[in-house]
Image (cartoon, rainbow, N blue to C red; front, side, top):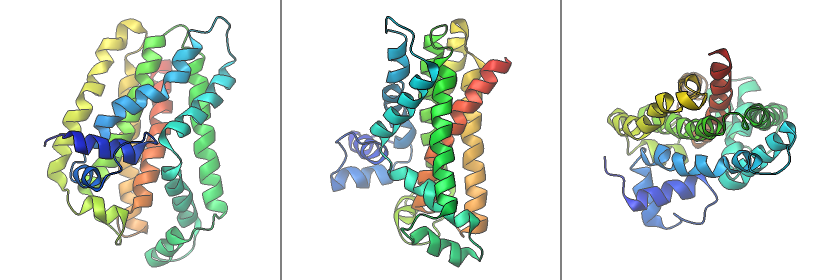
Length: 265
């Protein structure tokens, strides 16, 4: 595994609205390097954590719910809403009656149905709720909270990269463009890049954290496993929508799992 600058630019352009990685060479380098996804997760996570970090610097205490809403809005401003389209499409496909072919037809339909609407609403609300939960303790444990946001982002990107490595595309498209050039061997590179995030657990113990890192990464891994199983059973394989939805859901679940593990520790 070689993490080139071109691959990192391509991954950053794919995962965020940062104006880099638009060149064909960057895209080609990125799609051949799944480990670039968790690698850029560190930078994206740090950017996403800015509203929470800023809340600790203001001279007045901002209501936690306000910080939570700002956190969600800022996260989508940084990462864009392209991957949310995957959540909407999978929500529609999940409630449709029929076989895998029928569900894949729904994925290609640009119309938003009830299933997609509910899935979108739950995902956005859940992200705002996670921001609210961490805002309530950010003044007490600012370092741990910022670490949680970064680790959840790395975990989400690693979960998506894992599907790229082990999944097979259901049809031609973004999913096949990413999965056809990678294989299970690429998982080692993904794990190595995500390892520093896992090692942050012992580091933040003295700042009031600890189990939050394990919780966030376990939550993201759980989403990847469920997405992989569901996609193969219901869609016949991985697609771009599955990858996008995995990224969004793994972030949300990782944040909530980290907070829960932290609370119970």
